[in-house]
Amino acid sequence: MRMLVIEDDKKMASYIEKGLQEAGHVVDAVENGLEGLSFATSGVYDMLIVDRMLPGLDGLSLVKALRSSRSQVPVIFLTSVGGVDDRVEGLEAGGDDYLVKPFAFSELLARVNALSRRPAIQAETIVLKVADLEVDLVKRTVTRAGTKIDLQPREFTLLEVLMRNEGRINTRTMLLEKVWDFHFDPQTSVVETHISRLRAKVDRPFNVALIHTIRNTGYSLHAPR
Figure 1 (cartoon, helix red, strand yellow):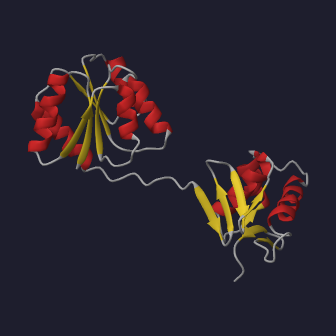
Figure 2 (figure 1 turned 90 degrees about the vertical axis):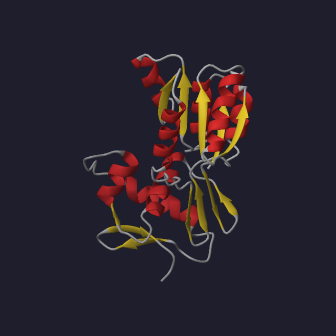
Figure 3 (figure 1 turned 90 degrees about the horizontal axis):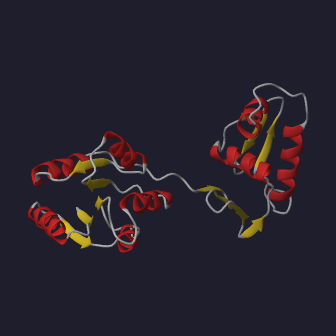
């Protein structure tokens, strides 16, 4: 594996780096938290070993920033702070394991090996596509055939639900629950009204309709069959 060690204690960093290299890993080491975050977000590392107390940016903030960038690379925290609350704080920040200094290198290696055996977390879908229609869930943008479509927040949510259920029937009750969080029928035409608005923006300016009415049942979004 290619590993990144972020540790400002040069002696400790050298000890870890040498041991990991002897175990067959490729290792890079940095001493500063800000530099470490820059390296970590490059996407080239299979695992990070991060000290909690770092200059520039502390280890907790580093890992929080890493997780907010949607990175799922495994992280082992190293720290001289070993209280239960501190360990919980590290795990809740996004760490996968926690090792208190001083430690035996054999224990660190065992934790590295255990983490490497975990199944990889599948990246969450951030762009939904049906035919020439695309919805970017992060940027909150919608395009069709390269043309940007402006949607209101509720219209965006409705379209997202339809696209996540491509080809399946979405009943009126299902849409009320998923889009409006109604667990009862308010006896309004809110679903029909928003479907009409969505069609006016997503379908009518283009040659092919993607949103289909399933008579007496609900709605389905799919490319023409």
